[in-house]
Image (cartoon, rainbow, N blue to C red):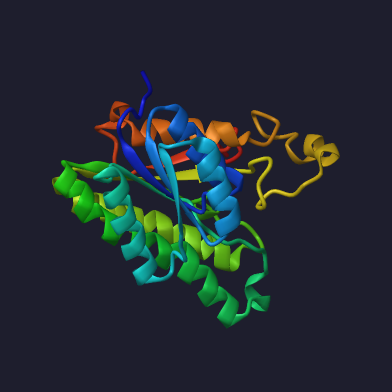
Length: 245
């Protein structure tokens, strides 16, 4: 038996990278998975590879109409929604004094408004189902001030705050809301450091290496599963101990 047997999970930004690993793990654990992304070709290909318990819906997470379509198609295909993973995000680095207002707003629109849209569109459907779990992907950049992460850091702190408020408001509906805060994760577009530089970069980290994507997915599976039924409103840091001091 899988940890997510018969649950239906929506995962945004799931066509590649860490989102694709999340989707694969959820299917392996017995879930039906709806993958969403702007990259339609890659998303369709992955959904086909994952089999009949996976479906792809093209989506811009900033568009309300796209969220309505994702919810409608998920309900039509699988009959309900038990989990939502707000994984879609954009990232770049820029010092505070050099950031551009238009770019800053774009970061907030995708990373924060996209997450909020997902919460407000999916939570009522989870309530109808008897409850569910929302997991919002933040970052260790949402727990401390990291130089050159003005817009990204602001967006990930906002996801953290939004998630706490949502957890407080939605608990009575049976909907849990938690955040995951990864550190450096190998094989993602947000960590592009060459392997021969890892030793120096992680020398002072208790676990001196970047995370594997599967290690983030392992925590995600727990938060989506009934094993975490009394866990809501909290930050779950996966960073090899990088932020312990």
